[in-house]
Amino acid sequence: MKRAGTGPLPAVAAAESLALRVPPGQLDAFFPLFQRGVTVPALVGCSLKSLLCDQFGIPADYVAGRILTIFCDNQPVDDLDRTIIRHGSRIALSAAMPGLVGASMRRGGPLAGMRRGISHGEDSGATVSGSGTVLVKLFNLLLEELGPLILSRGLLLERDDLDDLLRRLSPTGKPRRPARVGSSSG
Image (cartoon, rainbow, N blue to C red; front, side, top):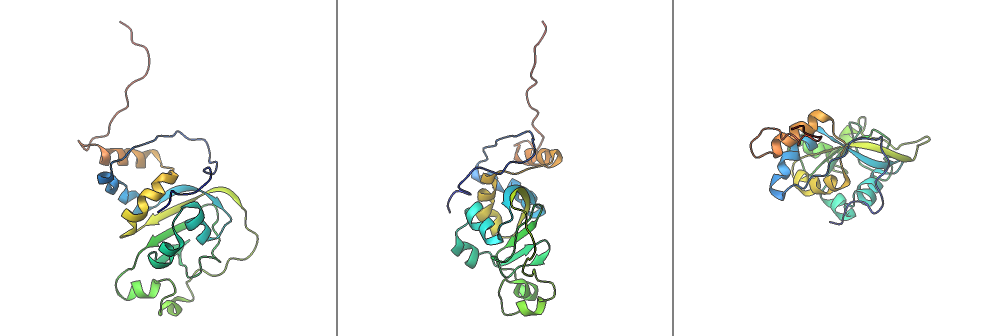
């Protein structure tokens, strides 16, 4: 897969930043965050397909063949071109899910008609384009496959989520405390 996005990240409210280098074997420390949802800077006012392919750098054939269940703002999505992303949109991505529920929620699947009343319809009306954020959730096989790509875009985390993540990344299971900065008397 190509590197996520081709341009600079959209501007977001001023926040402290932290860069982490995580060995591939510790990617699973991020899985609980991904399943709960991570806030990702994005350009909004575009189609869901544009967000996934153009901004996140996911190849179109991967989106078409691998991401089989998509929810936007808690509604199943069939048409990625007509689903418009807004600031704060919640997007859930999954590979194939088992059983009747999986079959009925599958994008464009034979049972998609059964959920017509709850499916995400064509967005209409004015949309605001510009910098914003989206909440992205990943499930099953997509955790390992898309997790690194989403991480490369950068995440906005609450302090508690960061503390929990650092605890999971620590070999001792205890949070690492940063070195104290300042002068010493002595």
